[in-house]
Image (tube, rainbow, N blue to C red; front, top):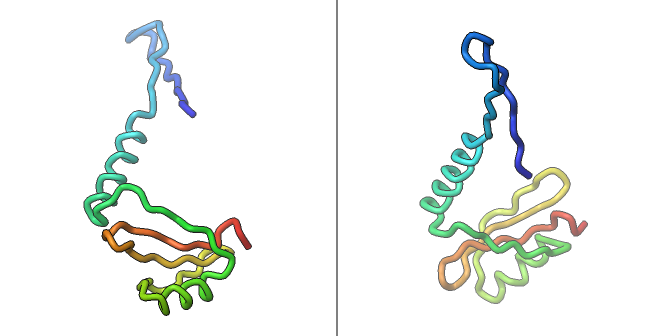
Amino acid sequence: MHHRHTLLCKPSQSKRPLMISPAHKQRNQRADARRIYERSGAAIKIVFGVADVQKFKAERERDGLKFGPIHDAAGFQFANAKDPAGNPVQISSRGIQ
């Protein structure tokens, strides 16, 4: 969704409204994505939805996949891992429970 904001200038400056686009927000989002990419090495993280994060994590760890700690968020859990190529992946119960 694209938003535009209108700012009316003083009559001595201009009689036409000045249209200001929130480009600074887009720059900030790009900068955030760049920092994430530089830190993790990937701009995209694949998230797998699972009903029981703790159970899924334990089963996959028996198969040799290593996960980080389980995080409790607002009504869901998630844990992060790396695939064999080093790409970040996540398991999450968000929207499933």
